[in-house]
Length: 214
Image (cartoon, rainbow, N blue to C red; front, side, top):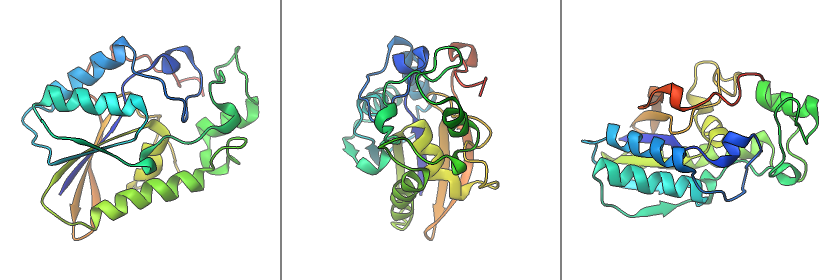
């Protein structure tokens, strides 16, 4: 089996530097463009099943990728693919000079999440890892010959794939995944192996690195 795990396209929250979590923002114009380019880059791949986070930015990304890659299949939804619940941090600005959250805690979130206590009245890292990895491990146990498209979110994606990384202590795997980054997992006998890591089909000049200063 092959499992394509894709982060959603760009949103205004990504551009303007506020935390999204479960906030249900749609893709912006550039986000739709990045999803189109990604879908076009995946032409020739026949997806047997698509499962998305129910949040609109992930759903729209799945719709666009399926259309542009030539796949006419329904989209299923699973709450375990949702982004981390940010609780009281939802829609708060996080960048230097305009932060609306605690400076020490937000730096910990972006540099050392495993030692981050969790979002106030939101989720912890352990909870995100448990639900996202539970989803992936359950899918791997199907051990079929199908090809899956999964659309999710940056923090959720890193939590899901953490047990497949060589350095499991580096939660962000060196960097927050870019919008529409594609990761491919090969599954055999219930075991997953990461064979493609954060591939993007577009010019990175079209995606400003929003997190470089953390």
